[in-house]
Length: 316
Image 1 (cartoon, rainbow, N blue to C red):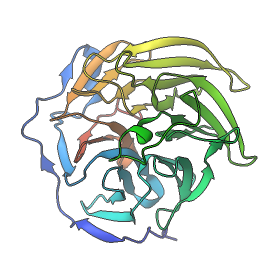
Image 2 (cartoon, one colour):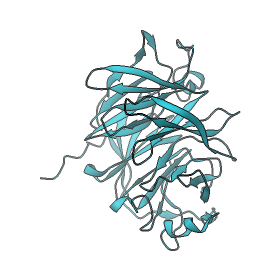
Image 3 (cartoon, helix red, strand yellow):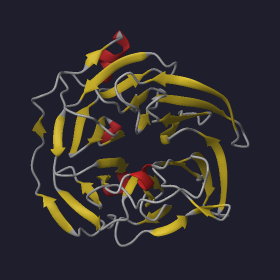
Image 4 (tube, one colour):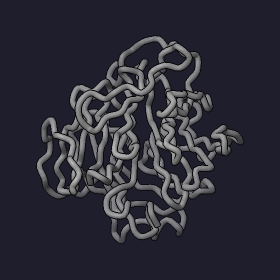
């Protein structure tokens, strides 16, 4: 029985093919291991370019849809393989990062300073908005672990920028990574960073990566994850030379594909620079999706882009 699609608030792009991005260099390999990752002759494609600040892409396989946020435009979008783009939720509370938990979406909201959930329509339901009786800063990005717990970051960006949140003073004196258990409502503070941003797990779940987007650090931090989910052995995994790391994705081989000022930088599981997918301007995040996960979707400023991968891409 086919799944029910989220109802479109309005369609902002009619079905049609993607447009090649002409004003950008071809992908660059720093290491021979990067060359078989991309499809032969793969170039960046433009899927949509009418957002204000695109962020938080997640592939919703059950709906055959790429969901992402326009933080400043306060909309949640859905791109379909026929090229159509629909507004799924309008007038959001500055939703930024999105994740998938089964067949429900998880959202990080700057405006309501919370982590919420929805079915891709209507006002999301708040899951957690406080830590020890004080309001969170502005949850930014989230990932659902294998055990169903929601891990999320909580920097102060939404309190500082009126285009991306509701300005205000933080009630917490730390900017942290949290683990939330939906079944019990337990919220645990796992680690503190200067400005924690994107996050993701290695394929075996034993390493957690977190982007620290502080301008003085601009690095991705790695932690060992114990059986009881505690974090240890904090270390620098990679330093981003152009801009800061924002959102990123980890593929089945443990490679980390991170946003930067130059495009998507790709690192091996050992932290070795493998290659770069240049973008015309700053990119904010990326995720894998499409048939067999062999397409990389990239958000940045007004744009949603994509590039096709080969058999050694995200799933190979």
